[in-house]
Length: 78
Image (tube, rainbow, N blue to C red; front, side):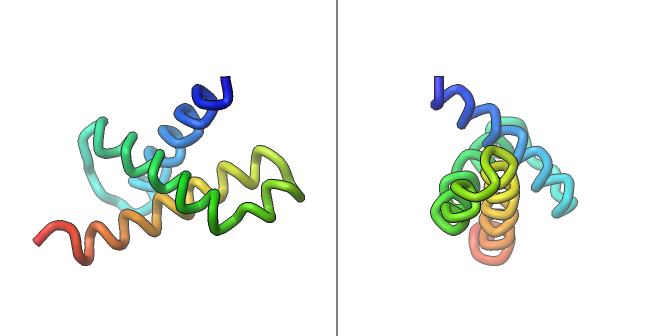
């Protein structure tokens, strides 16, 4: 069950991050950005999860996905 929750949060975070960063990606890329962004955000913002709960996890996932999009835009597509 936690993996399904992780996938849902990661997918939502990827969608939100791509909209905030104003990029158009296909669905698999959006999902991958969200999931990997959630991993990055989870490592960076782990202490917030213990303080604020699930909402902090979502914020961390969005921030992680946005960071990954920034890296992808600057170094990934050449």
